[in-house]
Length: 457
Image (cartoon, rainbow, N blue to C red; front, side, top):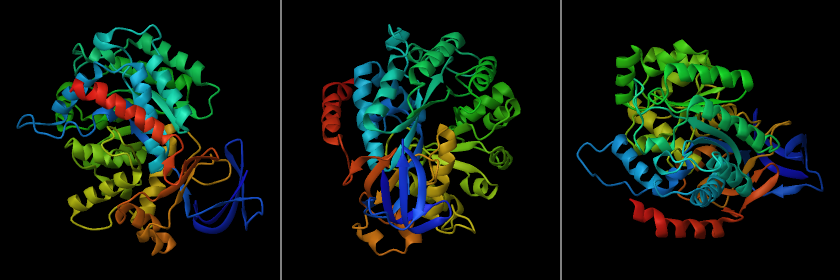
């Protein structure tokens, strides 16, 4: 299959008049000029974005906790509402949610997703006959909707530091080390011939996993799959940092770095509360900071130290996390604005070589996100997946721009979707702004919300 792009964002910036040859879902060749047999891409072409942190089931109650139940409303009271909702969710329900969510991600420009999946069991920890059923449901949703997925099953043991026993709700997430290893082995076998799917692991957090278990699992996983990702929630909340200091005598990121040789295969999700030294050390490690600005804002987590991090050479990507928004454009806008609030200056997340904030944010997030999902994505380049977005120049704010300003305008100036088409592995999954199956998937999701989810909260 051949495609022609009049304007295309490549590794060395915007290029003109390129023909892309795609074979078996990969970019085989990119050449100058237009091949007569090439499909015309009607708008500027940019790499697809990686969503490096998703909890699919949390989509079901986005927008339903925006009221103050008590004067100290926080992440922890929001978490209680999430636990209540989980009591009623079945694998069939999860499929409906993930289908709709993944289609929505594709419509908004995400072409890969890291699913940080911890809803393993039924209420009160009752095991399903197929202990991997929810994981398999999520893989099937990715295949059915057309999004690339890095499934990161979560290892969860305890309710808090000091190996506190999980409460009755948290047993829906928990495994022994041996159970978790068995789950990973089964999922590796289940997905081994699926080009769209990669696997990672996700120790939930330092509070939910013991020192012995995280050491055992990480070393086991690195021996089994040396290039596979390791994702972990870390330093999201001030209370978590204080508890870690009290228990380990070190801050969360400080402790993690003292225990492991972090690399680009690690994704530290949130990493909100870091000292200057932790920021510098994390940047030097080349681990990816997994930032979820809209969820972090919604939960009152705090502001990531982005300016120092990129000045130290740090690598970051973005995720929709709780899915309070499902748009990379909105996440990147919130990320930049958070830095402006903190620094009292404009145009913070950029560099001397890449001064346009929108383009810098997009390129850096897509490329670093690719490592977080262990996929050859994030660039339009020979040998990489044929994943890209076609922007809609009928959006007035884009139509008036120079090419270097298209992503600036798309992120900061528009109030409508700028995504016209989306291709994954050379297949068009979004046409005229809509996923090819969106209407049916939205109908199923509306029914689920009305008939079950609203009644659970």
